[in-house]
Image 1 (cartoon, one colour):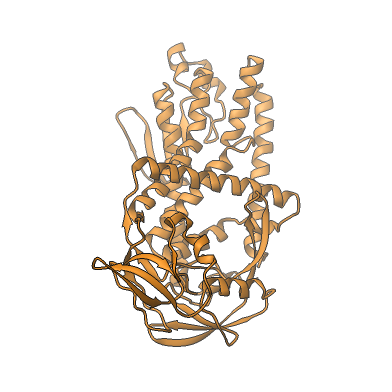
Image 2 (cartoon, rainbow, N blue to C red; image 1 turned 90 degrees about the horizontal axis):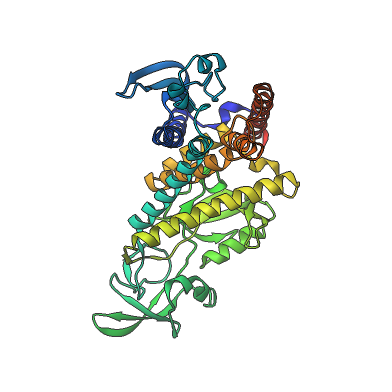
Length: 445
């Protein structure tokens, strides 16, 4: 594969790398700060807090004697506590032996088991907390659809005249009363897929019947990073009016035609700002989480739909937003674990595991769609980083927690020699995983 062809231009390279580095620095900073602050709270002294590895670009000391630094390679970070021999918290036995009992208590290896375990677990916990806060903040910013369903803004669409207006309360469609918004999608699924439907609205205190397009037209409301639609230059706000010459009036029409394409090229007539252009897309096979916890393979072009209008919104409560954030974070965790299991079992393609190039491309594409999309991506990636660090692999936080669990059960930690061997095995496993993910970036479609 031509690696240069992965990114179309030098400007694209700078944009992609910038977005990737920014996302990674935020996630790493939160993760390492979790280790640092909980270690400080539990009496363990941090000597170095580093964002990045390699040559130090900037450093400074705080009043507690911790050196804060930024290093040249922004692909991670670490906190080195007193008594650590390296960034992976290897034990500096000679230095610890020479310490007083008071100083030894301030080391990671001389602190009580509960303090060490909390400090180690804090990194992933802070990643999950970041995800919950971001998801909750986005919901608070966007709001939830008000009840009754009210139009805030009508979007421009081709086709029959749009008779809905801002401020209309939608009472019924095709004579059937509209349900609560959380049930609206199921309600729309039962409507006839025709160009125009009758809407009963409350306008200026009086009921009126007006004509307007299908509630979910074939509108591009969102684009999936690294998808066929994004690669073809489609934009949010585009409307697909025909596929292979056949008119489509509902987003579900589009979904069905793409799903039945079997990966064959599709010719799309795309309306935008009064003009129609033709775009040829080749749907891509994608493994998606299913409702039963498994995965299903579908043909997709990377477009998400939306309503033909912007609904009026109301701000949810803080507890509702936090609950939503926790729900989304748990969903990412479950989907990731399920995806890994199905890859190991050979039920879905191992190409679903992406490395730094794939993540960088996705971060750049997310940033190109606006700050909301980029922040959402950071929340998803933060959850993935927190989950990865909990895997029971030596070198990772999960491996250290396994060592602490062993100590809690047996009454003593593993020997220094056993730890060195296990850490070497863990490092080899992580490097092997990174090489495998990088090969996916280069050779998977």
